[in-house]
Amino acid sequence: MSLSLDLDAVLDGVVDSDPRVPGVVAMVSDRADNVYEGARGVRDLDTGVPMTTDSVFAIFSTTKAITGTCVMQCVEEGLLDLDAPAKNYAPEIGKLQVLDGFDGDGNPVLRPPKRDITTRMLMLHTAGFGYDFFNEKYNRMAENHGQPSVITASRASIETPLLFDPGDMWEYGTNLDWAGQVVEGVRGKRLGEVMQERVFEPLGMVDIGFVMSPSMAERRATMHLRNADGSLTPQPDLILTQEPEVHMGGHGLYATVGDYMKFIRMWLNDGAGPHGRVLKKETVEAAVRSGLEDHQRVVMLPGVIPWLSNDAEFFPGLPKSWSYTFMINDEEAPTGRPAGSIGWAGLANLYYWIDRSNGFGGFWATQILPFADGVSFTGFMDMETTTYQAKTAIGVA
Image (cartoon, rainbow, N blue to C red):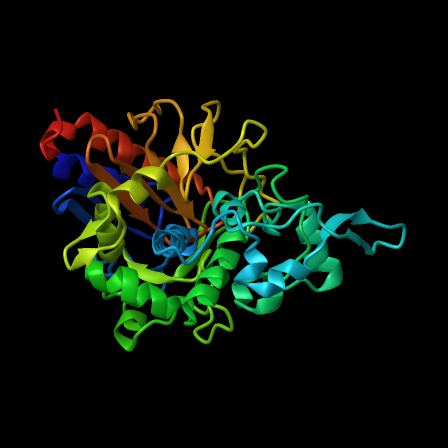
């Protein structure tokens, strides 16, 4: 089998189908370099500008792993205790209360949390935060009580009530935005500066940031909305704020797929980069293991705001856990992804996986809302399956 030809066929399929994706960039890397780079379709259905491998994407929650890396660097240096109260580093988090529901007049009922939030909880999504597009209570707070969307990148958007007492359960949410605030408290610099110095430069990442350079902005792929009939509507003005009050460690970066592949290779190479080490080997090994307790379960994400997300779950029926800070599939996936591999996704239908045991990983990038788009997600699954079927082509027995 030819990996390149087979993956080309997957990309051709999603831009030629009906319904289709506007455009896609996909890459696969082994420990040394990319073994596949593909781009198909267009950046914008209205302009027809071709999608290219250097196109720039809003990478949304694939930002989280980079923020998590910055957290683990602080731990390595003895500057951060994962089990100390996070308010020691980000004081405002200590003021947040638990939302117990709503009274007869529809007003939120709040109480103090039973325990402090720790940075470990933030890394594992067990601190009590959620997202309004995955949680009805947060959506109600947004609609009736003015809770801002995280898309605003405002401090108010993360200073939200907790959905449960810290540590009680797993819920996907703004935890890594707060972890970024912890990093800022430790380093005394904005998160983007920390990432630049301690992740991007050692890895040679040049097309990535919370604020796009003029060159990046020129290459930006347009967001598209999937309509009920399967058609797509370009949204050229749907851009993450370029003057963010908060560098949102949970979703705020723009990047090329090629740059993100350099980050994936760092995890494949036990923390080493071409221009310096980012994490120690032992830190990487600890960071890819589940940190959840028995009562904390990774569950399906219910789509509460239909234009932003469908119901979403990787590998339904397979047990999954969470590390620092990736999803782990605890059993082999139908695609061939081995148990213990790590990966995650971004809201606009971006997906990646990292298979450290076989030494390769991949990234699939589109700009489509809502999340868990049937065409884009199926394309990613096909890409991953095809890669495992042809894995001898990338030097894996």
